[in-house]
Length: 219
Length: 191
Image (cartoon, rainbow over all chains, first blue to last red; front, side, top):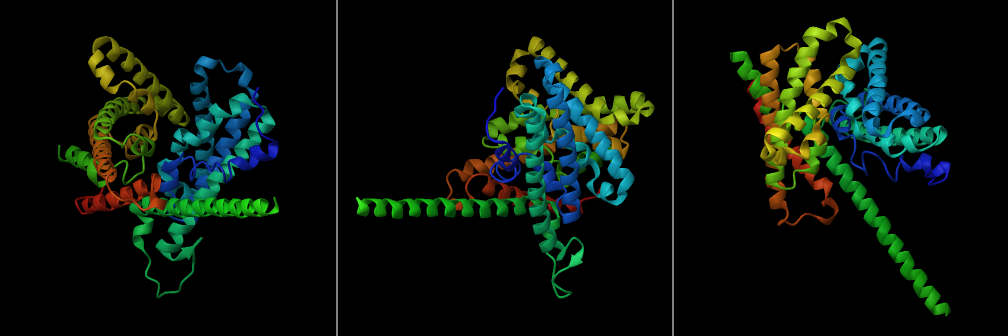
């Protein structure tokens, strides 16, 4: 049984360094489709978190009984069960949000993040580690959804969680809440991430150079 | 007849699966590097979408009224197994066609475009013919988006892209502009 990483690493890995959406480019459909307001984005993030957590729990507990040949179908059936539960629960508790998210709640079934975690992690690790991994990845997904939702709502509606930010003279960029805005937002977020990573790299290089010079002088 | 035509046009350009509903983005990002692969992927998409639409219609009409909570699960199981069976049949009957679609079929058996089609079709209450024209339009729309993207990306190889936008970022920005262009069709009709 592979035991890579301490529990802390398992938990934090998915949150930032291997963020499912921004780094691994998985689960793009919901990240683009339902992030036109922060509220929708968080509801989607929460539903996905729930499904991921429960599926990881079930898959890691039953991993001994799932035959290797039909494991993918088994995972999908487990995931589909929890998605149906999430779908019905949301419809009962918050009908407006359920209506806004529409078919995309059902489409959590085919979210590659969830199936990917079952195949790559939950089916090979103990229950607590699988749960830690699910929590980390789920939080990572929620963070990405929140970033997208915040960017699109603030610019596109001039509000945050429904509260107006800029006063009445602000002309909202309608384009950001329409489909093209989804593509453009994630494009800009990726550019910002690239820029930040390159800066980190350059700083690390500069630090090495300085340290190298110091060591050289000391010698 | 008019209705069928408008469902077809709407699924193809106005509410394009990829550029309007963000369905099937993974293959859109993955295989849009070359026009040739994009075309074959598109063909496989049309094929599976048609199967999915027929399955969804059958399940909705004859089985699911008795057990609506099994909708998702039955869609996935039935569509995935039927695609698998068809794949075996094609392999036997027409090896040439199998070579052309081969590796793409398992990739898209249950991607979001396929399941999305089945769910949209259910939510809108399409009958059999309406569903077929929705599937054909959607499939052609996916192919159109893939081929357009692939053509742009083939050209992109020879253009100067800013260093920080290289890779996925520039592809998303281009997709945004494409999606913007497709919004021009919105005046045509709305479904």
